Length: 136
Ligand code: IDP
Ligand code: MG
Image 1: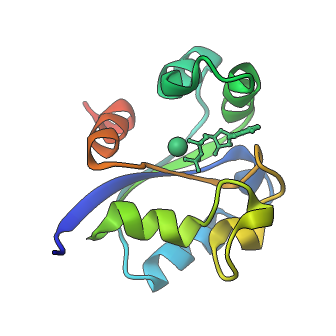
Image 2: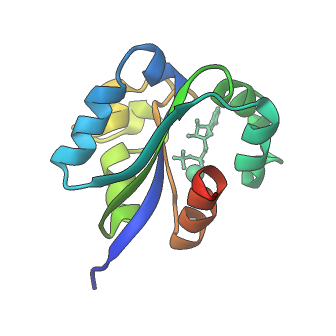
């Protein structure tokens, strides 16, 4: 079954720093996503810690939060049929070295931490993450 969904996408500091944000946005549009809202921001480390709270017990948590807050990011609400899964597929595996040909992480990712994009992994988290950045 298919239905229109919204998911949260982040273009991470490594990609914004290399001026890849318009190229990545174009990939989303070409693949049928509508960019419902977007903003370029830089977040505090404390906000990154909140955003990535599910990973707080992981050995890479501290580095991950420092990294996400290290420079400007582009956060977007993307809309499409089955957007959550479709975005995960378009991003590719977490580790760019294992990502499938044609995926964003394969094309632009540098390493498992600097992997250029974030995407929500479930309807529940998509709602939480969209509210995190866009709830007024
Ligand atoms: P995902 O972004 O594909 O959903 P998660 O497992 O949710 O991957 O991890 C969140 C982020 O944490 C990843 O995108 C990556 O930036 C970072 N990360 C994941 N695993 C590692 C690791 O083993 N070392 C360093 N960073 C990692
Ligand atoms: Mg994840």
